[in-house]
Length: 398
Ligand SMILES: Cc1cc2nc3c(=O)[nH]c(=O)nc-3n(C[C@H](O)[C@H](O)[C@H](O)COP(=O)(O)OP(=O)(O)OC[C@H]3O[C@@H](n4cnc5c(N)ncnc54)[C@H](O)[C@@H]3O)c2cc1C
Image 1 (cartoon, rainbow, N blue to C red):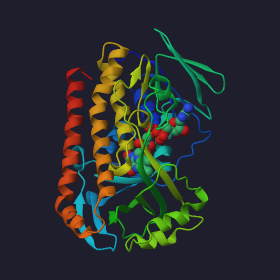
Image 2: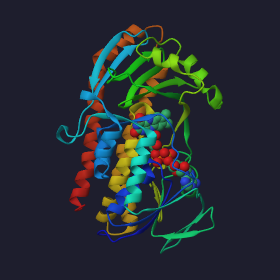
Image 3: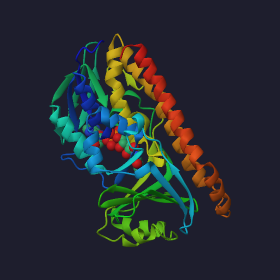
């Protein structure tokens, strides 16, 4: 298509929708976004962004703001402890772009969204908040989105960036539904003591409980536990239930757990993933982000995958001769990377859930031997898969 400007409607202004709006506008396309929340209100807690996600954020023009608002872990250190607080091993995540991009950064989710939405608005993207998609139709020359306000938006391309429970996916691939993973994730936000600068992961009996700095003065804790399907926990009960879920953990995390009270920022999520075979599009409608490939959080990569989708999409639109070719190319480029992350993440979660809790010493000894190799192996493979996509785009002149 050699960059012919398209009219694009994006449904959903989460990480995927905001990032795609920025990347597509930067490439000269005309983008409108609808978001069902009536204000920029995003989940509390924090998010890790590893170097591949930070690379995408640099391409989106927001990296300096992200580095200011978040907390880059010095030397990318992740320190493992057992749940009694005995150190097991330290690993290091890789940096990117010759060391210029940090290995891992923590940031408050609300800050990440503040920065992405500000960039999107500064680029002149038209964003309608409090507006839901209610209808979708397409023919040979256009797609039409009907919204909850009764408006009809015509576009060359419609992007479903509407998350794990995607309405748009329900229209184009109704057989694909989220899978419940059997895990619940707890998160809480706290003041950060100045000396706490590492990512910390404490290995409990089939449970994990970690600490991540997210700002000069803040950190968040995150913990995973097995959680039966359908066991709804009322938000009022979250603080009590989070303390109880991790009662057996000692320092360095215990003081933060013990601070949790009725007024704390606590969040519980029963985790689903989405495994959608290609194609991720039908006609002029494309899915990106969690709508196409939601992952379990064990590798902390779901958001980065959404950011990478955004950066690759305008290049695929530029490289292919027509829209069907571009959307197929996008899926071919992204699916191997997203599938690899999903499978690696799911495997980590399942291994944790299956571990022999009567012999945690053996598990810890194995972790000490293998942890850095596992990190290196994951990032080598991720970088290799991204390089394949880059080479293909390069060969196509994009
Ligand atoms: C517990 C947990 C921890 C995680 N930790 C990390 C981490 O550390 N690092 C990382 O990279 N990733 C992490 N992830 C993954 C990451 O949060 C997701 O991959 C990312 O938020 C996906 O962004 P998205 O924009 O695709 O979807 P969402 O963030 O879900 O955004 C979808 C948007 O669409 C809107 N919307 C939905 N339906 C409609 C509709 N019908 N009309 C209009 N708008 C609509 C929603 O309001 C929302 O704003 C984690 C996930 C979980 C569950």
